[in-house]
Each structure stands twice: as C-alpha cells, then as structure tokens.
Image (cartoon, rainbow over all chains, first blue to last red; front, side, top):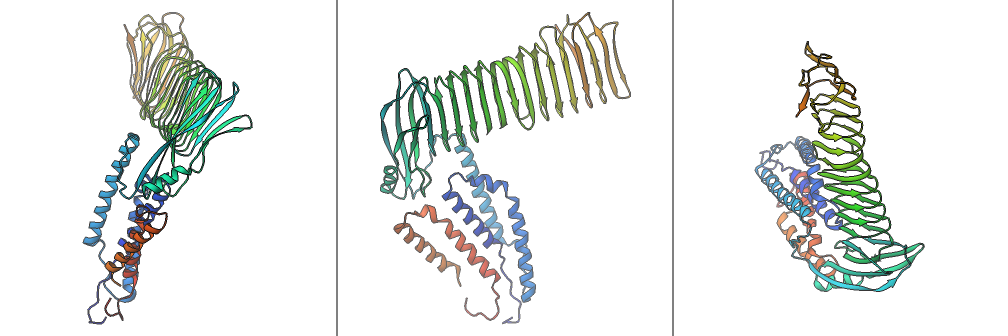
Length: 453
Length: 54
C-alpha cells in the first residue's frame, strides 16, 4: 500500500450489469422479433446469480492484493439497481400495452424517420380453383373474395430509416410481385429485410371465390373473408380472422388471437396464443395447443376436440357453448356424447344428451341436466367436490363414493341408501324404474345429488 | 483511466459512425453501456498499487 492504509476496491458488478444490458439492447435492436422484456423478466433471477458471482470475484481479488473487499452492495450499486428496475418496469408496462393495442404507434424513437408508399400490382386473370399463396415477412394481409377470375393486389409499404430519404430508399427497393408457380400463383414482396427491421408490407388482396388459399406472415394480422376453397393461415405474431369459408380452414398462430366463423368444412387451429373464438362450423372443430384464453367454441355440427397440456375435451354436436379459461371449463348443450378430462380446473357441464364422462383433478365438478338423463354418466374427481343436479322426475341407478368426504342426496327412495361413515360417504341404489347408470367417485371432497324443480 | 473522458470519446465516435454508415444512433447507443461496463470491470479488477495518477 502506498500510504500504509489498505485502500478499498470497487466491485465489478455494476460493470457486468452494464455490459449485459448493452448486449441485450443491441440484440433487441437488430432482431425485431427478439422479445427483450420477456427475456429480462424471465431471466431476472440471473441478475442475483451474477451479483453473487461478481461479489465472489471481488473477494478473491481483494484477498490477493490485501485490500479491503468492497461491501455487498454500495449506495451507488443500489441506486443503479433501482434505476434499472424502474426502467424495466416502465418498459414492460409499455410493451404490454403495445401488445394489447398493436394499432397504436408510439414514436419514442426520435432518431428514426418513417416513410410509406402504395403499390398497385397490375390485375391478373387466373383459372378457377387455382392455388394462391400469399407470404409477407412483416405486415397485415387482408383477403376478400369476389365473383369472376381476377386477382387484384394492392400493397402499402412502410419503413423506418435513419432519415426520411433512407426510409424511402428502403421502400423503393421492395417490389410486390405476383408470380406463377407450379400449381398456382404466389404473391410476395421482395427484399423486405433490412437493418432497421423489415419493411412492413400490408397486402390487400381480392381473389376469385373458387381459389385454394395459403397465407403466411411472420409478423402481422391475417383477415380472410368469403373464400370458397380450403384456407391455410399461418401467423407467427398477430391475429388471424377467417369468415365465411366454403371448405376446410386450418390456422396456426404463435402469438395473438384467432377468430374463425361460419365455415362449411372442418376447422383446425394449432399453436399458442391468447383468445380463441370459433363458431358455426359445419364439420369438425379441433383446437390443439396452449392458448391463454378465453377460448369460446359455439355451434359445431360434428365433433369438437380441444387438447392442451391441462385439458382434453371431446364433444359430439356442440349446439351450445364451450368456454375455457385458465381455471375453468364450461360446457352447455351437447347433442351427443361428451368426454372431458382436465386438471386444476373447475368444470361445469349442462345438458349433455349422450354419454358423459368427466375426469378432473384439484377442481370442482358441477353437472346439470334440464331433462332427465338418458345415457350413462361417469364422473371421477381427485381432490374436488362433485355436484350433480337432475330433474325431479329422473330415473337412474347410482353408485357414488367419496373416499374422504360427505355425501348428500335430495332424492329419496326405498331402494336408495345414503351413508356417511368414518369420513367417507356412499350413495347406492336406484330411483324410479329404468334410466341410465350414474357413477361418481372422488378421493377427497363432498358429493351432492341435487333435485331441480 | 478515467471513465468520463472515455465516455465522451465513445459518444463522439458513435455519432460519427451514425453519420457515415447505414446505422443510426438509435441502433448504436447500447454500445455506450457496453463500453461503460468494460471500463468499470477493468477498473475494479486492476491492481491499485504501483499506479500513479489514474
């Protein structure tokens, strides 16, 4: 020590934090799909680890040189951390808001200039039943169908640039083309990529009613109305809306909502996202993937199949509504059989005309009928209550057992026994003549058999 | 090795790059954070003895 007094070292933690944030911001800047806030939140515990490691290195360095080691958290570091938390919090709120209202544009980027321009592609006449493919890396796609055989495309291009001139140059380099391919026509913009994110190309397309259509966008919304042939839509980030389709519809989304209405064929939705709405389907409807919800399915003429990590639901002829949320499943009015298995969800089922099978875990089950049931009812719950409500004139044969819970029955009959012993309860026997079998079992929770007037 | 002057130099260089390349300052500003971080780490790790007038 030069002056006999061991000096205090400064810590490497603030420096490491600065480097880390700098690298993250750079990544986010050059890759528009990199969801910075998402990653920062998800990996925020890493900051703690980084802190600990940095402090360890500080200690070793201090021991080696005989200096005082730096304190665990200096005032300046605390201030830096609080500042970072504030910035992150603010930006998270901003990006959440932005995701919910993607149409609103905030220009917080004072160093960038915007420019936009329209392009009309000369009209093409195509044979009936052609396959039309539309692909854009960034931008919304809006497809209408019309009578006749004309393919009409108009594009709205917009871009950022360091100056207005630069933005205009970027737009000038992008050309929207209609090309004849093997079995059909492809509509796509050229040279969309660039250092300031891709040039956004919104496409407004009118196709003949008879086409088979595929639409693909990496970042944008898709709207398709009135197409008679099969429709395939893929959006990696954005909302997909398909109306009045004459054949099968298949949609894949990775983020965003899906609304599919009035389809003459089958509907197939897969991927992940938030809200889902499917209604008036003449064929089957299948939903596979993780959607936050709410998910609403209405009026499906054939089979409805929903499959996610937490639930599997199969319904035959859904004339009412299937609604799923993070914690609940509600089903009403099914013309055929229904099979529902779920975990951690409260399940409510009303009026299933066919055989009903319900299995749940850690959630309550409520089943109700407005007409006496005619088909078998099978309810199995693990850690949850079961409520079954039947019209008073119902006839059935019941076998209900709760391993750890009370049973209670509104129905009374000389051939029905209702016992509660040593913590477990049992309802056994029959009410009326004929009627279906009802099996109810739960490992933990009460069973209530209710009579509706 | 003082942090202040180095930061001023860095910012100046970034503005120059922004002027003469296709990258704008909006793209480049995180480099300021990175340079600052490297400076802070270097400062914390460097031995303090034997140096005069940092």
